[in-house]
Image (cartoon, rainbow, N blue to C red; front, top):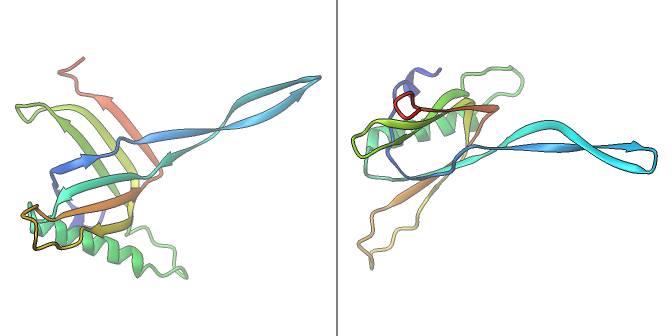
Length: 142
């Protein structure tokens, strides 16, 4: 994992939960068509957070994106990929559901437009791709 990504915590306003999609394989059996499960893939997740909530974390996330942008294809490196964790917290700050995104990397970071006619807090949305997700409920919930 990149040293500048270690232990960054961003409290999100909104987070997509990881979603696996399983392709169908078509099998012809006589006059019947049978479908069986094929390869699985994980859909990217979007994370929306307040930009001013943790400026150091925001800066580190942009550094992560620039690591991907400057990725040199002639040398296969994995420094731009990292493990990311999504925790759903209860009212007391305890984890009730956890998803660990394996080999995650940012696809896009979108900042909201600035609007001085509104007092709304600036938000940033980051789209993250990953190889797979491990999901579990907290032991305290089971």
